[in-house]
Amino acid sequence: MDISVIITAGGTGKRMGSEIPKQFMEVAGKPILFHTISLFHQFNASAQILVTLPESWLEYWEELINTYQFDVPHQVVAGGQERFHSIKNALQHCTEPIVMVHDGVRPLVSQETLDRCVEALEDYNAVIPVSPVKESLRKVSGKKSEAVIRSEYRNVQTPQCFEKSVLEQAYAQEYHHAITDDASLVEKSGEYIHLVDGNDENIKITTPMDLLLAETLLK
Image (cartoon, rainbow, N blue to C red; front, side, top):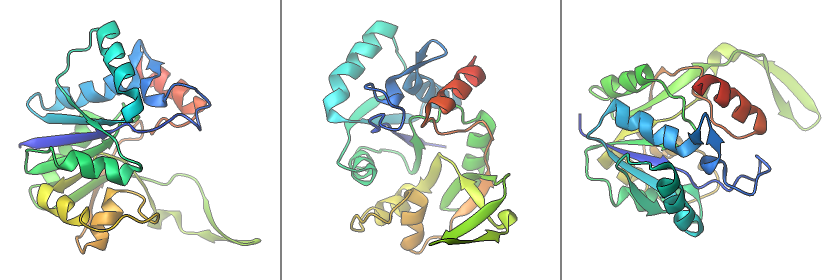
């Protein structure tokens, strides 16, 4: 299957408490984003890989590439003000009929999860990996809260995968702050979102605790 992969890496590291954006932090011997790019190249060596980065960090990225002698083929696209704008920019450069959108700080998505996504795309236009909620949940409203049935909920992961035309149609909508991910945007344009099993290790590295966990898993 011919695939374009958009890897979004526009974070600034605020929740990590670091001056260096988390996607550039070293884990298991190399920057997180190197791990992420490499796993998609391993999955499909002919995939078009596009990486969205903050424009102010493009020069730093080139320095990292030279320092670590990173040679996995990819194309850098300057990010926009919000994630929405970054992906919209990258979409203009996608050349393949299938587009996967993945968080740059999820370096632990499994090859099996990617296989499930691609297989499902043979029958559906929009596919996302999810995992069951394992802890009890409560819905909070003001000072009150109530238990909800956790079996009715799923944690959403990436890559979120689409027919290119479907994603382009979704991104023709105007940006608003209620947009949380690509699937919610595509859903608003009238498409059905098909769910497949993700993998528990496919965490989004956001906090120092996540960083410690990723270090252990990647080693």
